[in-house]
Length: 277
Image 1 (cartoon, rainbow, N blue to C red):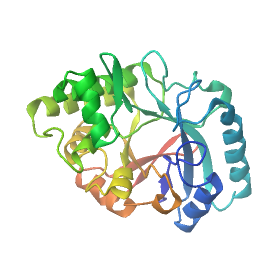
Image 2 (cartoon, rainbow, N blue to C red):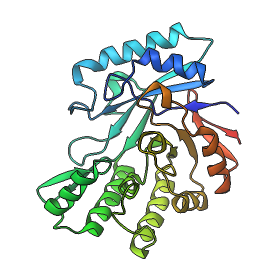
Image 3 (cartoon, rainbow, N blue to C red):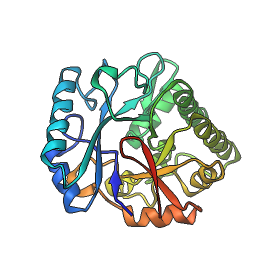
């Protein structure tokens, strides 16, 4: 089985290491295919998204590394493109001037009345955002997150769906909501069907285990079982923000995926391909 990772961040956005340091770490960890995926909301930016004036440098650097390390590792260049309704959409047409190999579509921002919170923000910022923009209704805020996921799938044109139940991060250290509630399970059932309809690959994202000491990846076991029921293909990504975490929990992730009934993984190599696990 070849080892791949398509969710890799660098100093071009909010990560610790340079792109070359990430490549060197990937080679040491015997990763065969590495994809770069800088946070992007083109043509805008934030403190953790790549700046518009840096796009050319990002493309040029990853191309340089692809040539320099040819024979040791295959390198592809993409973006983790945020979905913000009316502002940013993960769509190949929106990023066509940079000719990305692939796109990861993700939702981080959850809009409410008068503002938004970040789904993977700090416990304090999320609770304050829910209080301020959703009148304190946790259920409405979580439902809005999944509404944004469905809008992303309907409006976007991308390759991989990033951390599709990112909101569960808020249950790592404390319990924002009960994942066994019927309303929440209904959201996951609808989401799984929409992912299937969109025809994208869902990532099993191990980043929260390495970065936040979570006990499991995204998606949860229940959502992963729903993805399998709907024949949604999956891939393993680390969402690496430093070189040490570039393949964190990958061995365990294979078993996690097999337990859900999967027998193959999707990956990108000049187009989508599949391999047995």
